[in-house]
Structure formats: structure tokens, C-alpha cells
Image 1 (tube, rainbow, N blue to C red):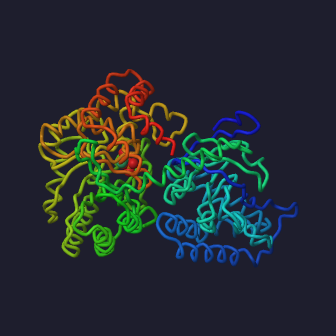
Image 2 (image 1 turned 30 degrees about the vertical axis):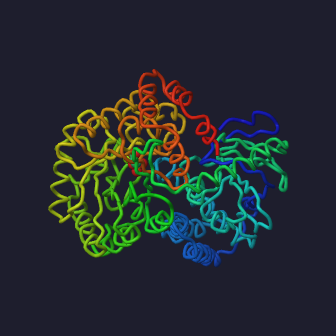
Length: 559
Ligand code: PEP
Ligand code: MG
């Protein structure tokens, strides 16, 4: 983000929470090309093969999001277009290492120009380049060394393949000089619950073995921390551990229940969530299963995967969202490639206009999975704009044989403004504050430079959440929140005060939200909501709630 505030402090973007102190271990740098190019032409294809095999083996040994991203990187090493480009270049006289380097550079340019999720894959592409070039030059595998003691891993940028070789028991924190908060390193660190700071400019200057304090809440890396910082790290780690001991259902101090649910994307996530103190799944992002699929998943494939997720929460609440393809989550078999403004185009529920069979097959697969497991899912559609779309979705779901609650996401201002009409036809709503902020504030959610506008504390966004929650209360229907704002303990108080009935978030966020709720009465939450709504800026809204909140909860925000 910004340059070091002083010679000892590096400011970046924090991901997650936590403060840890430990010695630096550095990732091996990418191999540079020798002046004479390097590598023998006969080794080109075998080098790609060896890298693909190694990554596939690691993907098989890993679980969850990590396994998915490793498999995706392995697939990239097998990509015929990339290999073809490198082979053509060798045939034209380039050295193999040079040919791989240039072929990857060309794909990096294409992915970067495409933006969105493709741009996020650039790190994977570079990882394939580094590994294949190292193979060709006979060098050690680039990436992190085996850790002999608990360490802070510092890298220029860390690819998913690098994180696969990490012994997570020995990784205290991950710090990168590049990368972004929505990149793979950040996602995997979040999944593993490891404190992480990305975009810490200058941090690569810190020598191996030096002690650093990594504060994910503040986004800082401090070299040679003083004893006070070390003490603070000990206290915060202990306090976070003790917060996680509380496994009671979500409720305010005076017993008003607010369900605490997990956001998941895969069956592995479901199994992990089932082992934690959550009351079910509030958002199953089904498109995550098919991000790498070239063709639409079959009915049987879908029945199998949905059954596994429902089975993990036998008899419990699982809210399944139908495919939210398009914009930041392109699916090869569904997304229209040539849209000028994909976030405003045929994405989410709107796909029904182009490929109606996709939705029908998915709903039928969910109905079959319900029969197989005996657990009836809640289902909801993303990107609903009108009450008519909501009514059509409910009818299609009923037609497919789904007997549980059928609802819709409220993430378009139009749906929030007319929530009463939407709730006339839908059984429940779930507010997606990530997209609601994007569309209310007319701000691309992938654009890091405009994060202040995307803030869910923006008064206009809060107003739409309030309108939706009020309509749900009047209709006696449930209104959950499953966007990132549900993971913010102070926002959780506001949402509860506005009448939201469930909060769905990544597992790591649950203990602090549970603690915030049970430290306040419902009336205190209502007062917090009023204060937030009365503020004229996002900053003032948050500050107002912070000043009203229990001091213990304010202190817990940094854990
Ligand atoms: C949201 O938009 O808030 C949401 C939960 O959906 P996603 O982040 O998957 O778009
Ligand atoms: Mg969304």
C-alpha cells in the first residue's frame, strides 16, 4: 500500500486479525534468465509435465480452497495454449527458458487486460513460469524453505503452490510485498486462520531471521518489536483463544436469538464448518465448485456434491445459492464473454434468460440431494432486481420439487427499495452487502483504490439494509446478511438492531461476532442502529457505534 512509515514499520493491507511476533523466513525468489537463455529444447515438455505432476500431487494431499487453487495451477501447467505458445517460440529459435518466460508474459498481459477473476490468476501463471524455468535451468524449486521453527513467511508474492509446501503448524503469519486482499494468498491465509498482511511495500528488505511483529488488524509489520509489543501479542493471542471457547448459539445479552452461520464454497468447507460452533450454513456459493469447469456440470455430478454438503449438516439449516456466474465469478460454460459491463449484464439470476436449463438442472439436483440426505435445503437466487424475478424463481424452485424455504438475495438497490413486494412472493431474503455496496455506490468491488466508497457503513448502504430488514419484520419473514459486513462485530450490533435475523460469515470471524452480540442487549443494538443511520459519513457511523459499544468488545476488534 504505502511506503514504510519509518525504517522499522512497513504498512500494508491486513487480512484477518491477530498480532504475532517471530523470525522471518523468506521465499526463494523466482529464477532469473541467464544471458544465454538456458535449457535444452528436448526438456521443454518434460519440464511442464514435471511441474504439473508435482502440483497435482500437492493438490491431492491438500484440502479445501488450497486443494482447489493448487489443482487450478496444475491445470495451468498443462494448458495446451500456454505449452503451444512456448513450443512455437522454441521452434522459432528462442531458448526454452526464454520461450516459457515470454509465453507466460503474453498470457499475463491477456489476463490482466481481462481484469476481475482472471487478473487474480496472474500469480498462478507466474508460479508456473518460475517452476518450469527452474526445472529447465536445474535450479531448486522456487518458493518457501522448509521451516525449522515457527516463522513469519515473507515473500514478494506467494502463489498457491508456494503455500502448499508450507508447514502451517510453523507459519505464524504471511506477509507479501505485492498481491491484493482478494488474491489467493489472502484467501488461503483466511481459510487457515493465519494472520496476513499483503502489499507491504519494502518488506523484502528485512533480512532472514530478523524478528518482526505482524499485526493483521492494523496491516503493519514492525521490525525488532519492543517488549511492549511482544507482551501485547501474547495477550491478544490468549484472548482470541478464550473467545473461541464460547460455543453458545448466537444471541444478545437478553436472549434475542441471531443465528450465526458459515459462508462456504465447497464440501470440504462444509465439513470444516460442521466441526465448529455455527448453527448451519448461511451462504453456499455453488459457483465456486465450477469455476474451473469448461462445461456445465451434469445433474448427477451436482446431486453428489450437494448431497455431501447437506449430509455434513444433517437436519440443519443450509442456505444454497444458485449459480452466481458472471462479472467477478466467470464460469466458462455460462458467462457471456463480450459484455462491456459484466457487473451490470447477464449475471446471477439473469442467466435464466440465456440458459434456463442451467437453473432448472441445479434446482432439480438440489431436490434430489434433499431426497437422498433427508435434509431439505433453503435455496435462494442471486442478483434479483424485481419482485417478478423473485416470483419466477420461487415458481421454478417449487416446480423442481423443492419443499423448503425459497428466497432471494437482496444485493441490488431496486430489490431493497421494493423489499416489501419481494417478500410478498419469497419466503426469506439474504442481504449481500458486498454487491449491495457495489451497486448502491456505483463502485467496482474489485477496484482496491475505491474501497472507501465500497464501505458497508456508507449511510446509503445502511439505509437500504434498514429498508429491507424493516420490510422483512413487517412481513414476519427472516432477513439474513451474508456479505462481508456480517463479519464485523460492530456492524453485527447494527444489523441486529435493524432486525436482521441471521449473520453468515467465514468461520474465523464467528467468535468475535458472538462475543459482541452477547455483550449487548437488543435495545442497545437498536440504539447503535439508530446512531449509525443518523450519521452522515461511513466514518462517523462506525465511530458512533464504537463509542456506544462495550469497551471489551472494542478491545476485541484487534484480536
Ligand atoms: C454479496 O454480494 O454480499 C454476497 C454475499 O455475494 P458474493 O460476495 O458471492 O457476490
Ligand atoms: Mg453478491
